Amino acid sequence: MPVLLYRLTKRYLAASEFTALSVAALFPLGLSIVGLIRSRTLDPVALLSLISILFSIVAVSLGGSTKLLLIRESLFTAAFGIVCFVSLALPRPLMFYFGRHFTAGRDQQRLAEFNAGWQRPEFRRVNRLITVVWGATSLGEFLVRVALVYTMPVAAVLVISPIISGGLLIATIVWTFAYWQRVRARWVPERSAGESEHAHI
Image 1 (cartoon, helix red, strand yellow):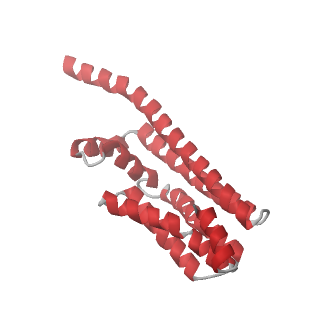
Image 2 (cartoon, rainbow, N blue to C red; image 1 turned 60 degrees about the vertical axis):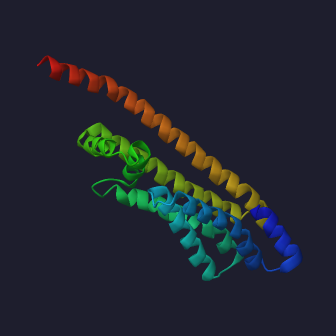
Image 3 (cartoon, helix red, strand yellow; image 1 turned 180 degrees about the horizontal axis):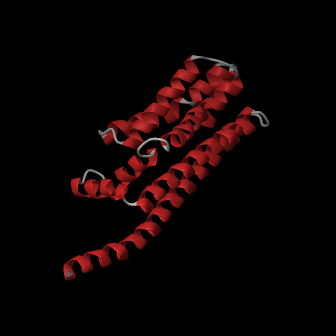
């Protein structure tokens, strides 16, 4: 749809790359807003989407060259990657909060259990590793987009970059859930053994 909007705008409305790219951004912007309204809650994922939209709007309003406009969508991705690495120096890394959201939701007992897990060295290592992977993937996606923008035509970038970005995102999500499930599978026997020992005592 963004590619179609871009081509229709260039053909029938304006030859300006700025105008065409701005119109092409309306579709993903509308989808994000509808999703946020339907959820009616400001969870970490919705907050991330909202910040991304606002970041893109500010980038568009600042203007700039065509190449900058093409890169703007990944500027937030780069910022997210940087925040991931910076958060490693904080008490808890960024992806800890995303993991807690997807694992515990609004269940108070599961939230308490997830928070208590931070006392375990392996739990801390796992969360930090996931944060590193997300940070590296985000910065990598940004570098790939920059390379595409400076080596390929505009229309080709509009087609290829979402595929690459989506592929990286899906791959990272799949890896995260698979890795998390594998780690949890190791913890369950340990927890069961600890509970049995406690019961024996």
